[in-house]
Length: 382
Image 1 (cartoon, rainbow, N blue to C red):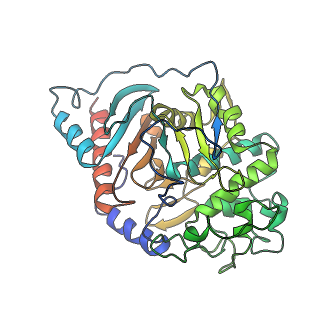
Image 2 (cartoon, one colour):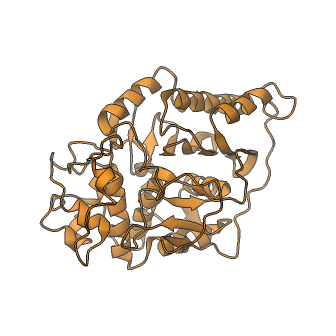
């Protein structure tokens, strides 16, 4: 029986996350530069577009869940879940077909919603695409081969694999209650002339462990991955995402990606898209990154990226920007309740936009896990 994570394990996970990376796990600061969006994003100088194409990947209607439909035995459970967990958008795909789609809190199928740290899973996928395209040789290449401004820093012996798995050994504090944390100072510290803002900050951080020996959650390091992909491809991250996935796979609407102070996409966060395009991205991953029969990533990329590369708790851990809580499913997660849940064995994708008042909550994670299990239980009855 598949499960997201059961109620006995999840409080331990929450404690482990809090002890390891501070109380604001999974994503970046919720501020004017990274707030949850319930309205269509207004394009400005601080965003790049991720253009859609002329052809849309259709999501046909599938068989509704009788239990969650009007008059069904779980109709009220769905309503209570949406209300109590501040869910703004909830979409279930199975076999690429919509089996359930709901909106609330003023959100709608036409609005963009902030990905928060779900973007990390998108960025890691672009690394795979850049390897497939020959822009990057290997995940075992040194980061400084692609970002020369990091030479002479703690990143000298760090590989792309270390960035993907957040095991660089470079010190980073992502605690938002601490005004002296790195995540708090990241957007405030002076930028070295002529240098990318992320690189300027990250190159000054000291090492605290050998690369590959310690896991520390760091949004800054996924931002670095974005710089690396842009440097390797000689394209903006938004253009590369559009050309590799958004246009050829057939996303429904142009997305937006927020920029740092020097005009680089904030690769660890801040990608705004429709709920259906969150689900399409999950479906694209479920299909092993294949578009028109050809994968845009190397063979076996997602097998590796979505398996535990760093064990964090019994049976659970971190991959290449993906969270794994059991051997049957994996997730892209962001604070305030953002999620793309993927279960290959059931050909299942669940996309969630939420507006939790808390950045994270063990109780809310348990509620989501239990509701996901109620969905898989219904699937298993069919």
